[in-house]
Length: 55
Image (cartoon, rainbow, N blue to C red; front, side, top):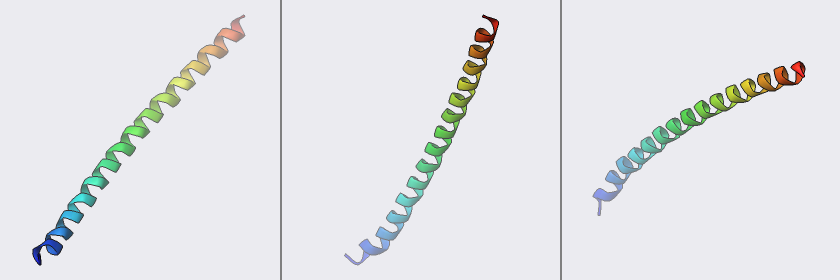
């Protein structure tokens, strides 16, 4: 029973490290998705403006 608290700290630290890594990966993924979406919206806006100006 006395070993659980000491191993619990290392387990807790390992858990926090895994969560930090997962959060970092998730944020990078979301930023990449946002970049693609904003680039797509900009391209679509340009296409729509050219089409309506030409008419």
